[in-house]
Image 1 (tube, rainbow, N blue to C red):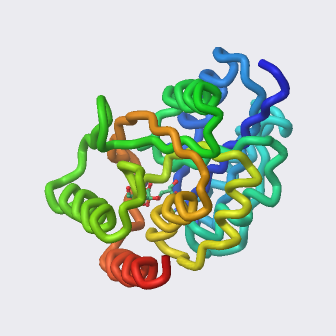
Image 2: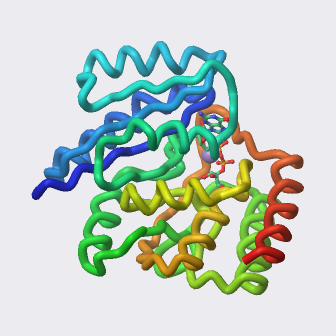
Length: 239
Ligand code: GDD
Ligand code: MN
């Protein structure tokens, strides 16, 4: 469809079981909707052999569709995006988790939304319309809701889901945002959307359901929560 190309950045750390399924689903939805795409896997030296699985997938789907940009060790999600975007050849970039919490079926809706409003970025949201979270325990729900709520009150960012990370960006917009973002941990997602508002970029939203992972485990822990709180205060003080 036209000349638009979508580069999907998939950061992986111990996603051996999930990677084949998410890859298959991505290819299916892109092929069905007729959009040009590539999937950039950024594996951080996963000890479970994720990279070997990715290599097999590359043999199956082709190296124009599956691009491998591994790093030797676990350097964090924020820098994984910075690394991945350098290799993106699309004019749009999609960021999502590889653990099936973000379903590729929403991507055609992101693309449609972007075209409707000619948006600079489209953000998946768990907090409006049919959006929601499935499989999280109460503690995790409270943390996510709480983080969103406090941030909404402090920063009034004009987007309903600040900590989510299923988004579509114009490549140059993402480039500009990652260059200006200072935070490294989980607060990164939030800083991105807050800076987007700061720069006057337009934001479209698509309700998504976030389903907790079945395979493997979350890398979010107490230190990330403290990092988030610090990052939030920093943003409050500086934006
Ligand atoms: N390359 C790389 N390096 N990938 C990583 C790293 C890393 O250091 N840490 C995590 N990942 C990958 C995981 O393999 C997965 O594909 C994705 O990043 C998200 O990691 P999870 O550990 O599954 O995150 P989560 O489910 O706890 O958190 C999700 O929800 C948060 C709150 O809504 C993510 O979407 C977060 O980005 C989001 O802030
Ligand atoms: Mn996850």
